Length: 142
Image (cartoon, rainbow, N blue to C red; front, side, top):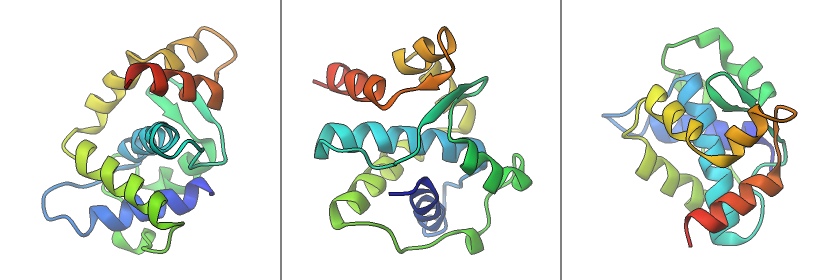
């Protein structure tokens, strides 16, 4: 599935919630965790694009380009959509939103900076490979 479809669903979920919001930076980290947990739970990638290791953690450049106009502001509801993937894919995205919405963007940045996929990519070619995400999530959560 395209990262933009997952991103739009996260934005949609954030506007169903009266307490927690989503900014472009937070969105990038949620996409990363959705990818990792989908691999862990459903044994397949959720997002077709690769993540890059940027200063503030994992980033999909196309998603950065799509939402950068909002800076540190909340992404508005018009950017969301409730049309996304299969039931299993929706359940993964919803679970990540439920469990990670409580964290601010910079808390999520700190979390990803402690994880091997980002560390290895920063010290390597700057790309967080799907293989590294798979290996990390399978080892960290089993």
